[in-house]
Image (cartoon, rainbow, N blue to C red):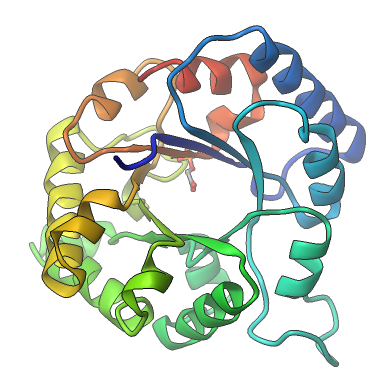
Length: 253
Ligand code: PGA
């Protein structure tokens, strides 16, 4: 059975004190909660990863993720963070391929392939983001576009390596816009992604892969999205910055 996952991508938000407050609020809320989410992943700015991992160590089902990693393990890359650093502070995952990094940091499919490789080589699991722009959707090319993102950055992996990948489908037009993909639009793409994985790795691997939806997911729409057959949870941006909203989404399965 694939895991139900809710991940919170804080992006570049929260001061140190605000971050600690949010982690404490999440701990307090989650410790008294019964829910059926298998994994909750907190993805704070890298500066706070160590605290996030340490403070949530005793909170059931909580893991931490970086929002990026470098293609090299160490070296003269001012301002960057490596997978070894991320692992050493207790994180379990790295988000890779977020559309904001593809856009603002010019991250190509090929660069992401290198990042995926170095993450997996260091036992860091990957939340791999894919998703199309409004322009690509309006030309009706969105399914092939997402397929090419998966092929170019992931489909060189072995079956065993692929078991460390979580997919996040995040249509760019839905991120931070308040426009959520409809449950039908989300299900259509998640079904296709699972189909592509099955064609490459077989149905057993496809059935075991968690595919998250991201893009203006909130406490109001999470339930109907998570009810879709191929939606295994969410990658949450804005709504992960408020403990009560994030916890409400965790309870939406
Ligand atoms: P959003 O962001 O929930 O604020 O739309 C999602 C994401 O970018 O991961």
